[in-house]
Length: 189
Image (cartoon, rainbow, N blue to C red; front, side, top):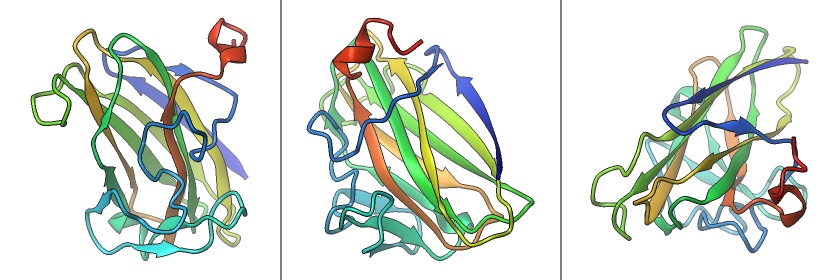
């Protein structure tokens, strides 16, 4: 399997990180990022459903879509602290053939506590291009990176979408959390 990752920072200086934070970790600010028993707290752009098959195999589920072109979800609003470094990431399952497909995660921050008053800064955006091997769908390792919130950020929401080439698609272990204390002081570089 080959994969190519493109990181795109729009005014936020995204940095790749190489450690994993589970969505079920107490520090995860995104509500229901592990889809433990439902898709509560998420808005789907089209048909989606809860699946009992998750990325971690720990009995929690995932959010599933019949086609990659339909796979777009947005989290509910949650509080963030201004000028803080957060790690963000997710896992994806996509029936991708050799043509490949794109995944994109965007986190928007807002100047108020309920995600209503304008963006506080350019969004944190990453785009991942994955080339499959034509085999059965498999969970792709966590796509993860970090960003620093703007000086006026008080709340955020995140969305994830997929491209157009894959079949059945699912997302799991979606998180936005403070860095692990072991990595917070530069040990992740």
